[in-house]
Length: 146
Image 1 (cartoon, rainbow, N blue to C red):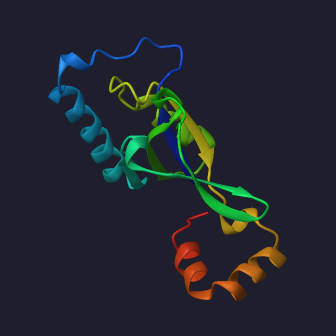
Image 2: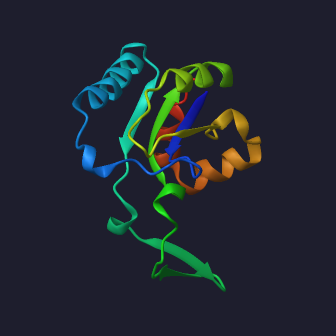
């Protein structure tokens, strides 16, 4: 089963002191955690996300997409990064999330959600997916272990 663990700031937390500077030891702890998950064979992807100012928000109205000109949600409401892991169960995903380091200010709250895999969809939906996107579905589904 594949899970995404998203990280965001705790909206109740006091904002981090930005004058403190870069914490090399804390950063190394995050990288060791990535390495640990990689060596365990569960890490599919892990990335931090740039601030919202370097992105865009796209909305839909009356069936048409358009760019929303800010204001963006406060940074404490935005996802700061993510892990995608492949583990046997939700309990395993939670166990990994509980081991994640913290302290960067954008990862106080971790949310664990299962990604949809081929075993989660009815056969008629799988057929539609395979007919509409044969190369993509073949590539994506082969990466799912369960």
